[in-house]
Image (cartoon, rainbow, N blue to C red; front, side, top):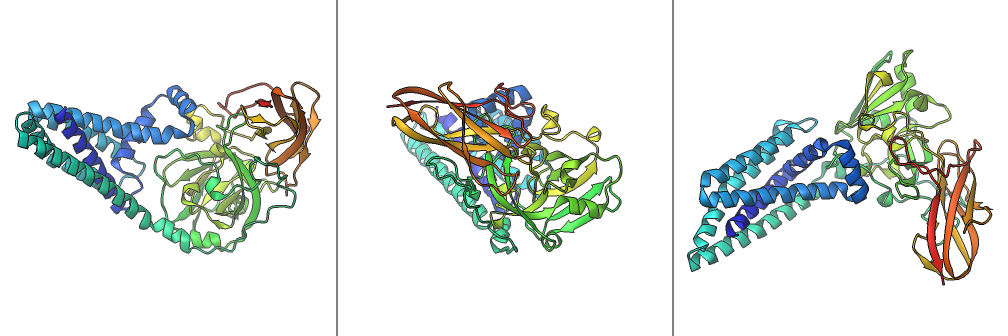
Length: 496
């Protein structure tokens, strides 16, 4: 048991020093995240979808934690082997080092500095393994050896925790991108919430979503960090005049400021992967007009700083009635790092996987037939228009409320089309028309509210929405794959 503990503490220490080195070098990734990314990309798509369906938003933390625990378990085994034959322990470490090297090479754009954290971690392992395992072996036969083993392992473990904590503090305190964001001043407004947008039903999500509460879906395990000074956008492909635009040049252009609701294609019926904010940015159609789009193009491929790709219909970006933009600010503040700072794309009426590229650095005018974006490679539809949907926020499923007259409510959305009507139904009775909140246009969600008279016992509440085109959302249930979920949100609750 002691050799295993010695090896495990060795593994933890090596991981801690490698993470610390990556933080000190201000790298976007570290060996643990690199290996986790390899595991993620090697996992078959159906298996990944099944696991995500089970753990939901915990998929990335659990992946990283599982990778770290696997690493520690394997180094523990290296300690066991080294206690009997030292060379076998080094073989295990060599294999783990090769896995780490594969992870670094798997990065989108590895640099010489990307290999340094791995080297630091391996050096830590090579130094600590014989030191701790030697103490573990002596502890089997010597009383003083037991004390030495306990002192060494406890001290090394504590030092690992300190190093990890200091690395996290350093990385946060020294973040160039965060500091640049803090000092940035943009000529933007916070946006006043329209009078009547919030219907004041307790428990209904606010019409404006604060930045810190905005839903968050990112593919990569680490957040790309890029400063405005280092950022530029390349516009190329099927254009007459390729462009390269710096952040200062973009920020000096005329800014459009609009309320726009974004939602994720992975949003289940009644889900919370939808949020509303006041966005400030430059219209994509103006940039494309300046570049001059050639005949035959039907798509725009956008690429993130981390290499993620997205395919968007060209018609959605050039539509004069749809303010697709390169956003610089969100609710009157520069974009948060996790939401794409310094520049991201926002397109009303399209799911995020075909439009909402964060950390945007490349925009290529092309044809859908000439490329496959990240999510379309994984079986999702290439177009991704938002579906008309509605949700009940009050009451919650499984909730018990007081009998009598009660207010019910929630939200409905059909971005770029608009909501015309929301109806709710209690216990299979006649549909009732809901009151609708005030909205500035068709690109945001709308709150709905109504009243029910509840007797004691169990109840079922259902909601459906009709959009401005006259389409009423279908009751038929469909999964989120390949182009978004459908169905009426139904809540089972009770009154007393």
